[in-house]
Image 1 (cartoon, helix red, strand yellow):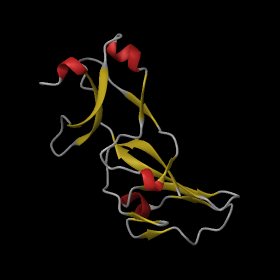
Image 2 (cartoon, helix red, strand yellow):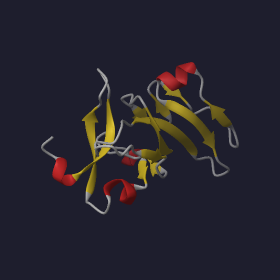
Image 3 (cartoon, rainbow, N blue to C red):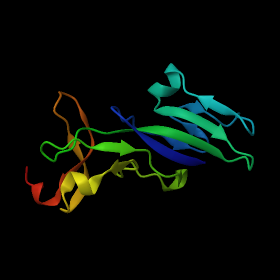
Image 4 (cartoon, rainbow, N blue to C red):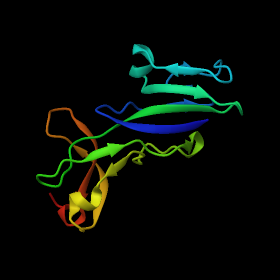
Amino acid sequence: MKLKFEAWGENPEYNIENETINDIDLSEMPIGATFIGNEETRQAGIVNAFRDESNELHVTLKQSIIASKIKGRPAHWREGDWIDSGDYDSSKCYVNPTGVSDLTEGEDYEIVWAPGIAKNEEGWTIRKIEDRDE
């Protein structure tokens, strides 16, 4: 199974086993089928899924993103690349910041898991490396 992640404001924990994600069994999807998420699957973090002609299941999942930690510079994000489900690591960010060189003005940056501004908000963000102690 292949996984891709999109930027969302929430980040479910994922239990992935074979073609089941957070107790949602996608193994019955026939070749050529496309699934657009419903309320139940979105709560499980599944945005959509399809099975290609080679019978491989492709699933798009949510990953939490919050505002950039670079003062006055909002971050924009695009979906990540496809990965093998066996390579999934919950401690990694799979969505990609766009325009990072514009955001950081040539400074080194890092993608980190951080608390947001709002209560109970957290997610992946970017910050300048020299800002680590903030």
